[in-house]
Length: 220
Image (cartoon, rainbow, N blue to C red; front, top):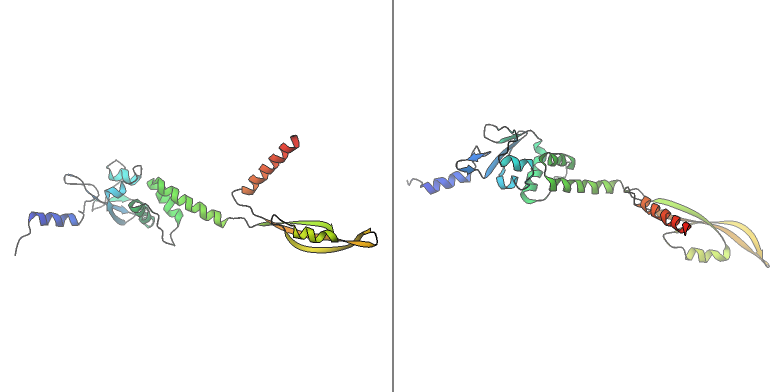
């Protein structure tokens, strides 16, 4: 049986990261890094961890003194929740935030802030704000107006209603005027309109602008 040559033995050694992959290998830094996060071991590359230069993980794998102990395999010990570390590591790998449907974004945000991963923090906060805005949208308010008109004006008034006003009810209040030999019936016409407001105060801002324009018009 032929004995494997030196090249074959070297190839076999490089296929599996060494047990002490948390730090330096012989002759320099190892490509692979082990992280023991809350008892769960994650294996990744130094290039992945260094993708965000200002992050805790980048400083850790570059050898800065961050007072991180190691376990018996040489993996860096990090006392954080491993449940939320997976999405963070995947973000560093491919730049996308991918979450399981049952995973809380608040938990991932907490860990992203701990590891100081700026782009991920901004993405999660934007997603949370969009959800909050959708949930807290204020339902539309109905504004009602009562208009008094004569019978001959009724058709024209109803047909020319615009700007979202809608006819609601018509009340006959009898005859109040007499023109020649004919009585003119009087009606109360109830109309309504929906006013949409948002939790970000867009409607209140429009009201402030309207009041300002009105004040300027009064001074002119």
